Length: 302
Image (cartoon, rainbow, N blue to C red; front, side):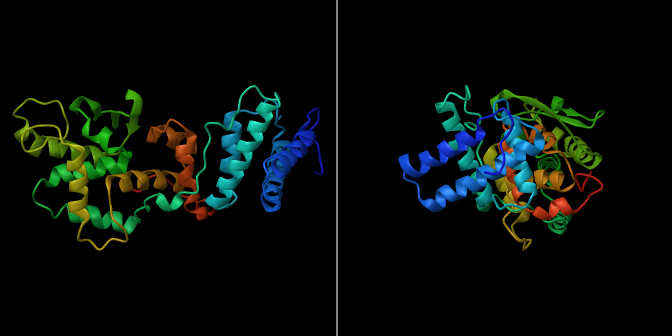
């Protein structure tokens, strides 16, 4: 360790932490060496930011992990560095230097391979061109795709939309997410036009039961989750796309396009309805070229 943050025992704590991992926990010398390098990097970042180990916040730690992703570190490396910080802050709690473990709710798993691929813009355009060729439930299907891709809704949020949730004047859609938390999403003219066309030309003929639901099945009842998945699959099945398209793929592509376009990760967190920034942060692992490019706007269909 080449420096010591003023008025802190960080050097002492680091040595004790390293010793405990090598002797008490019996970790290999390679693991201990990696932990030491990771903590040196973290402490250097603290010094550059003029942060104190005693008063650093959970948001500060989230920002550090975001900083690592923007520096081009692979998700596996960030996952290891996160594990190191988790162990270190647990140690600080044990030593009564901190009153709580700030890393308790912060996770970075090496699971980028589990994420669906983002749909390339040329394939998105192909999907929407194909939707215009489908005769049965054409307007309903277009509206569903516009909302999933243009607003990033979960399937549960989509099927629970009511007519009153669509604000045509303010170009907004209100949805209810996990934990019954409501959020208002900005949308675009294309999306709202597709919804209006569907309501006027298809939905009104189905609404024999006077349902308030936006999307109805042939019996005039609210569409189910299974129906939405089946609709998305059927509308994209024979297009020779690079990967399978699902409702979650469209939601994922929404977040990806926003971040590629330069949207702030906190704003994307709000738009996606993520309770924790950790859930949104995973999207920044996918393409490090984002930090080298500038986009005029966040979403290609806006």
